[in-house]
Image (cartoon, rainbow, N blue to C red; front, side, top):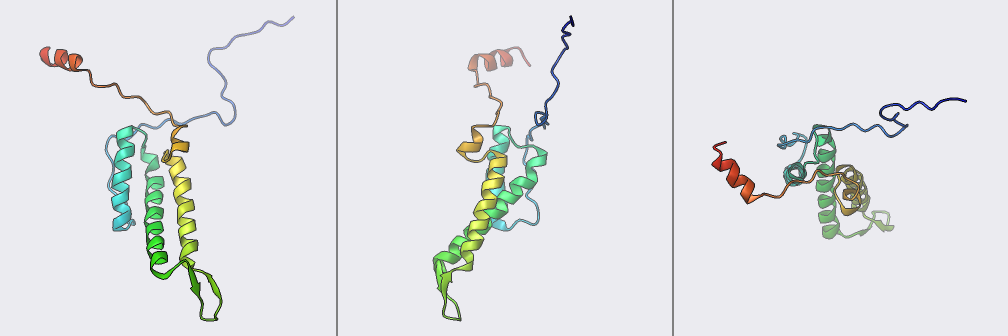
Length: 148
């Protein structure tokens, strides 16, 4: 009869390896290719993700993609509200504005990047966010009183 040998640790199964990256403490500057509106969104969303402790250096391109798609969606919404969602082409055929396709694609890109970043309730529920300890006034006082 064979003996069962116990091993320390577990053998990672396919798909179970997980790379943990250190979260950023400050947000890097917005990439140069972003428009002014996208760069503003980058600073807004990026600072929230940095504060939550969920943004790593490898996520910067995904964040930039999310913000570029957001700016494109805003532009498409303006164009649709200005010219209408349905237009008449030079041939006399009535059809959807080309900006509807631009908007649909921008929203799709935002959805994909948002899921990767944990933006939105569905994707945020699956994130393992480190909990921050609430400020303890007694601990702060004792730390200050000890001269540290």
